[in-house]
Length: 79
Image (tube, rainbow, N blue to C red):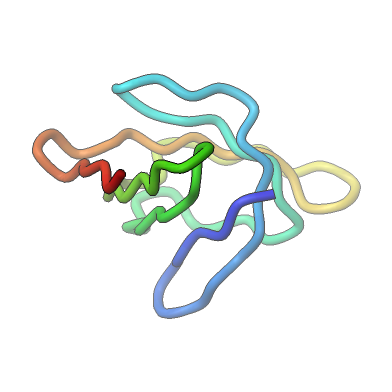
């Protein structure tokens, strides 16, 4: 699981699909559509930091899944 920041609250989520345009995540906490998201996670020795907005949300038995559209120019890599 990775940590994401929604409205000042850190939440753990599992990234299911990742691309330069966005991500699909599974989590126990579902943010609202339109809510801004700050993401910071490690991929090997690289830290990835990005910003985006929740564009869809689907409820399930234990939380659900949601999609983030990443904002152009709001992406950085620290190696």
